[in-house]
Image 1: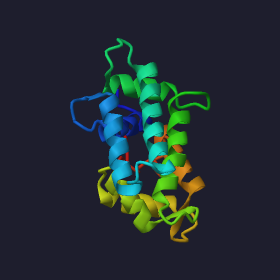
Image 2: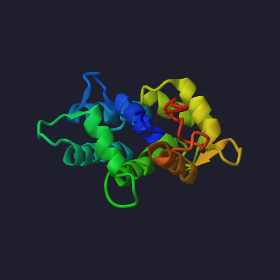
Image 3: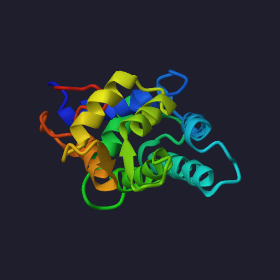
Image 4: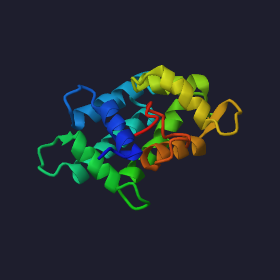
Amino acid sequence: MSASLTETNLAAVFAALDADGDGHLGVHDFKTLADRMCARLAPDPASARHRAVQAACAGWWEQIRESADADGDGRVSEAEYVAAADAHTGSGPGHLRVVLALCDVLFDIADADEDGSITREEFAGFYTASRLDPRLGESGFDGLDADGDGKITKEEFTSGIRTLLTSEDTTAPGTWLLGVTSA
């Protein structure tokens, strides 16, 4: 049986989060993600933006640990992550809620000029800070910029992330933000 597009995208999210490539997520992976984002987008440790990124990534790890670390070893495998995240993609509490809250924080720090939108350059900075392929950022920007005005609003960004985590529609903006075009 082949994986659904959602499961394939969740596996891609897992791979992006697994900072040390050990095949498991742990607190260190989320600390590394937060540190990378902060170094590029919010370098002042005293700033509210820096603290918000650190707190949001720590909260994401705690949600994943609580929902997916069945054996309590402080690590989450890809299979555990995909199963737990996929089970929590509805409108209730869980993975999607935490990720969408993180989206607010990430959008705000990516919006370097604080004008309420992300430009192509700001979006590229987000991908670079996340150590994602910048080419994905180019196509991602074009897809998320629904009205073609050269800017991504918070609503467009959040909608794209929600689609990445929940949609089986390969043509929907967001399902391919991590390069997956089919399951």
